[in-house]
Image (cartoon, rainbow, N blue to C red):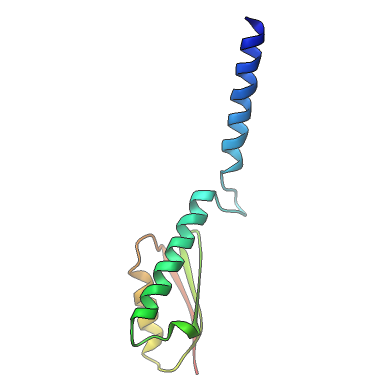
Length: 103
């Protein structure tokens, strides 16, 4: 009986450690947040590529904890706010940092 209780306790402690390993900290993201960020990045990139006013090949998109950063170059002044508008339209985006440069 004591052997079963110890074994159960061991597996319970192991499960708790495994779950804690998936949690985020102040300097890293949890697994779920990482996946959400990758999904947001993919969706923003796809929407930029589908819009004729923006050239997605010249715009880099990075997402960290729901904050999207746009960087790179655009050919027209109008493309800068348009790219930001497109990024904001994606579900899950908390904020957009627009670092696009007019070339």
